[in-house]
Every structure is written in C-alpha cells, then in structure tokens.
Amino acid sequence: MTTILFIAGSVTLFSLIYAASQGAPFVPTKRKDVQRFLEVADIKDGQKVYDLGCGDGRLVCAAASAGADAEGLEISILPFILAHTRRLFSENRKHIKISYKNIWGANLSDADVIYIYLMPEALPRLKAKLEKELKKETKIITYVWPIEDWTPVAQNETKGHPSLYLYRIAGGS
Image 1 (cartoon, rainbow, N blue to C red):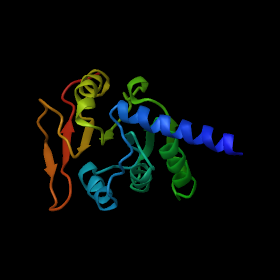
Image 2: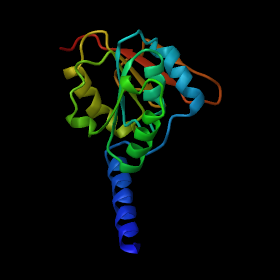
Image 3: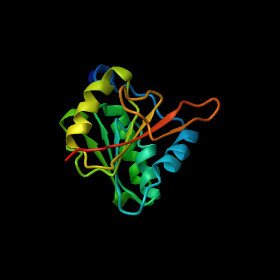
C-alpha cells in the first residue's frame, strides 16, 4: 500500500511540476472573479468556451451554467480529477467536457470564447497559436496578465482583484 501511495504521490507531483513548466501552475481563479469572467464573456447559448488549464473546473462549470458548451483542458492529474469531480456534480454536465490535454496540441478553431490564466512567459507562444487558429471575433479573456502587443477591447478592474482583459481576434482562419 505504501508503494502505491508513493507512486501515486510521485505521479501527481510530477504532473504539477510539468504543468507549471508549461506555464500553467495550479492556481485557481478566485470564486468572485468567475462571475466577473461571465460578465466580460457575455456568453450566448451554445457558444463554445475553452478554459486553457482549467484547474478544478469551476470556470468551465460556470460557463456551462451560462449556456455554453464548455471544455476545460488540463495536464495536471490532481486538478484534472478535481475538474472531473466538479463536472459530475454539475447540473449542466452534458455541456461540460474536461480533457486531459496539453493546450499546445489542442485545436481551438471552433472557440467563441477562450479563458486564459497562464503565466506571462507562456503568452507569446499562445498568442501566435491563437492568431493562427481562431476565427474572426473570437473573444479571448486573460486573467491577471495582458497579452503583449494586443490591445484589449475592454478591461475589467475591481479593487483588490486581478484585472481581466478582453481581446477579440481581428483575423484568423
């Protein structure tokens, strides 16, 4: 039993370290800021929403409750399990998908809204991916850090909370 716990703990720790090295450490969006995201995103029924590095899935579930077909991408085992558990208890679980997937290999071309809470070092590479893949007018919302060389169409600031930046893709596929 001790060996199994050691292996499970080691795999979990390794996955958390790997996720952090990819620009996505497990740091959940504050609960109060999930509502702010929903206001900024202005989700319409049936829109496709992605949360890149979805952590415990709270934002994905909230997006589905707002009418979206929401998908969270996560590469760290513990947050992935937490997100799946949250999905199982969600009233909108049929509109929620949690994928154990690295964002760099994911096809995001069907997105209407993308939420990003990644480290700033990952944003230049992600910016290039988004510019290449996304359709015109896709909304991109970043939490805490802006995307360099992009001008937000809106910025949501609340005292004592990180900023939310709203962008729209001007070109794309």
